[in-house]
Amino acid sequence: MMIERDFASKEIAAKIGCESHTTILMLKKKYEETENVENKKRSGQSRTLNERYEHTIIRRLANGKCSTAILLTKSLQVNENIEVSADTVCRILRRNSLVSRVKHKKPLLSKKHRVKQLNFAKRSDRRQYCWKKSGEPLKNAHVKPTVKFGRGSVFVWGVSLLVNEMALETCTKLIETMPERIQDVINAKSGYTRW
Image (tube, rainbow, N blue to C red; front, side, top):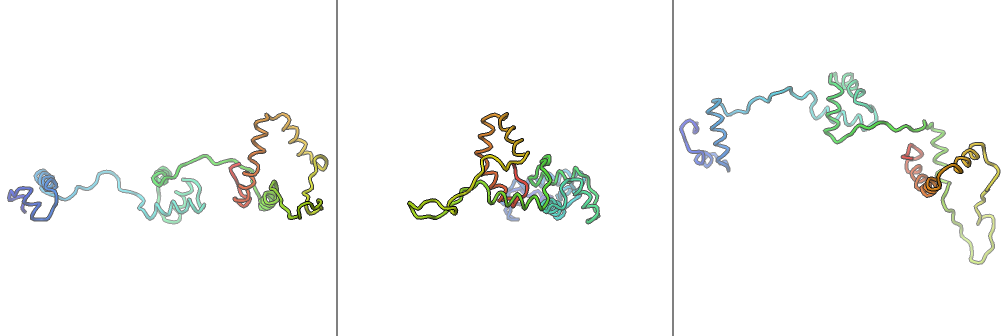
């Protein structure tokens, strides 16, 4: 070996085509201490899950097959026969920029509710346009009928009582955000929204 024959580090670097002679100096120092230039075995426990299993965990979370770290550990144990702790799964999820949050509480929506909500959102609170000649009198086709009072259910009257007790700012905010909320219901295809 050139190191044993006391070649200068710059000479060794030039002969083997290494750009930096400091690399040779580091290797020389390592050889003098351990009589070996190979890298030492890494200390600590080896990784339990390789990249393939990490992708599997993330895929199962994204597909909705598992929603918690505990369910993911059980899934790995059953399907891949790998036993890991929930903490390990949490570390993998955090490493992949996923964060844990408390689930939002929303009313349970059946298929019937979703269909009704979507139909309401599609037909509600939008301006309806019609075509007519200028100066032509109004016909039934040009009017959107509304009922101010009457035909109201107990629920509607309960809401109207609430509105009287509600702050004016809150009521105004609800009215102003109604088109945005309806559009969110349509975009979510009558699923859960942030409202």
